[in-house]
Image (cartoon, rainbow, N blue to C red; front, side, top):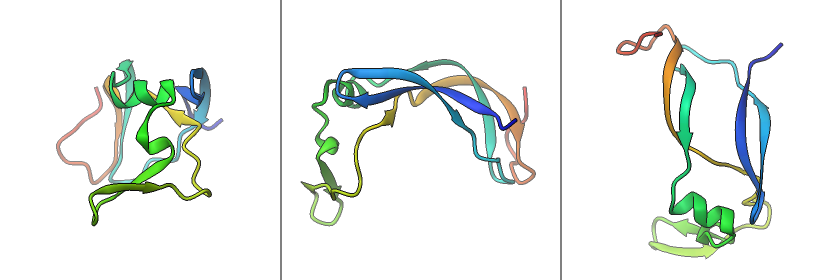
Length: 102
């Protein structure tokens, strides 16, 4: 059975639910962390939850330094929440030099 992660997903504005998402196989440059605590960002992620995030309908053009309409082929939702994590390293790839499991 492939390992999964339990993720809080924003399905649409003001609609969130937990989902189990398959983890990709880690490579030699990767680190696998088991999350102990996670939180969402009170600014960008809360705005996404409320449906007021500018990136929901626009993309940021780095060259022009302004927002432009987002392409129709790239929907904003569903979107995972909680990218600030405290956890324990469970596995480190062969090329990872400064981190160890535990």
